[in-house]
Length: 62
Image (cartoon, rainbow, N blue to C red):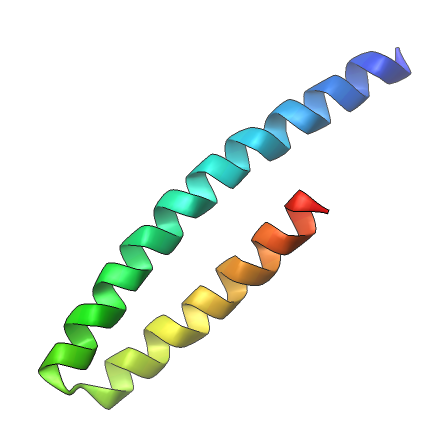
């Protein structure tokens, strides 16, 4: 039973990692647009969001 739970957790983590990478790509594109526009407030929001996604990705990959 323990192996089944570990396999499910690993599968869930792998799926979440894939989604996180797509979210990071999306946020990076938004950050780029904000930087090109010179929108400092928007850039800061994207940077904060990217930091949270980065931390979650690190936790899942550990």
